[in-house]
Image 1 (spheres, rainbow, N blue to C red):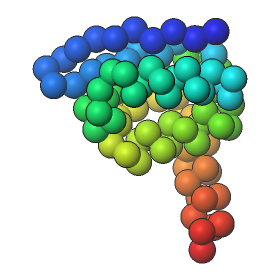
Image 2: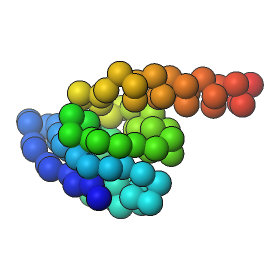
Image 3: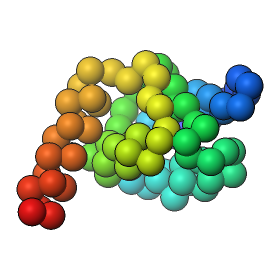
Length: 93
């Protein structure tokens, strides 16, 4: 189970995510993000995230590539994001 807490700061939206973010929750998470703000005005605070899977990590990488910022991103998730990007780069050529 996961939750998102919305905090507005000027023209940016901070979504404080908490709980477990796994493939099963990705469609809900995508819907939540789409309803809050354009991706380039979005900050995802991962301080209270307890568990992520590879699909979620690649989704977070996509969000960041589209302009979202990741706050309080644990080091292991950063490493997995870099791995996801490297894997995609090697596949695309």
